[in-house]
Length: 516
Image: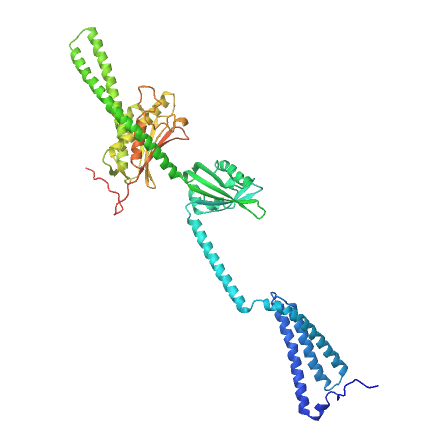
């Protein structure tokens, strides 16, 4: 039976003939084997430290393949001195199996490995992401600067317990200026507790309606805030989450206080202009018959002077009564003419402190016999305003006369407190503020908007024309301000007149007239 075993010489026979050849094979196998064993160690360390590798198991497979290859070289070096063909064959068979398995695994994996981005592509992607991040940060900075400098007040409310509670997440500086509330007082707190008392109850229905319906809400509010009386318009936008539920409310509030004041001023100016035109015509038409009646009354007085009978005496008395009433009617016509020409006269810049002080001194001399205590406080520096000094003095006298009537009315009603009138003058921003306070009965709330109307009076017939306060209001408007009335908590009324401060000249000082 023929043998199929190859006719090969035993391993190492050729190298026994040439020792140099033996050393060449020995050193090559040992060096290659040791190098093969060190490479898997480096691969394992690399795979353990880089946890972000796409296919970490392939490093273990390559390590096993290289170890098998290195073992075959070391086994060949060993069998040169200790021949063991079976062991060497088994090691080579193991190396062949690992090599085949690695090759089979590598080829299907090759397309996915090729699809991985190259270091250059990764570098480009990193650079693009850094540029995008820089653009996002720049955009965020611009948005933050825009929100910070926005004139409208912005606020974000977080909805909790399905609209049962609201927490203020953020506000911008305009919010702080509008409501007079620092951000630290409202941010992160219950919106109902951190907002202005009395206002939250009025805005809560709008907030809850926005949560329930998911619709944008528009509303207008007016109230006293720590920053003063304010009127604002609010737009409330619901913000939904991924489930479609309203989780936040984005609100913007616009301060329209000045707009409403200007609108009211325009309406009032138009109304008063109509009244002024009517009054001018009425005064002109009425003054003619009054003057004629007074002239003929004087003739009648002169004709009845020589009559010394009882009938003549009654006639003289009747003439006196008629003349008094005609003079009173003439005084009323003069006041009407003054209302029509409230803005007449050349405007000039003068010291409001001096003019108001002069009016107070005049009234103090007149009211002293009635036992009325009149006080005046003003800054030491001059307050320059533009208008007519006589008009301002007359307006202050009208306010003082109204206060005098109020304290005397309280005294007649049995008030125990002494009659007092306090006048103060101060500067608030670009306005001069004149306040006249009294401890009278105050102004009925229903009449606060009507007391400055021409011919409106609460006095009995024959005791007032109803033109004093309207003339004072006309003077205040003519000097760039206004007038308002309010009741004091301790009792009494406070009439506040505001005047625009005169604009300074190039040297920074408002021009004032030189006193003679």
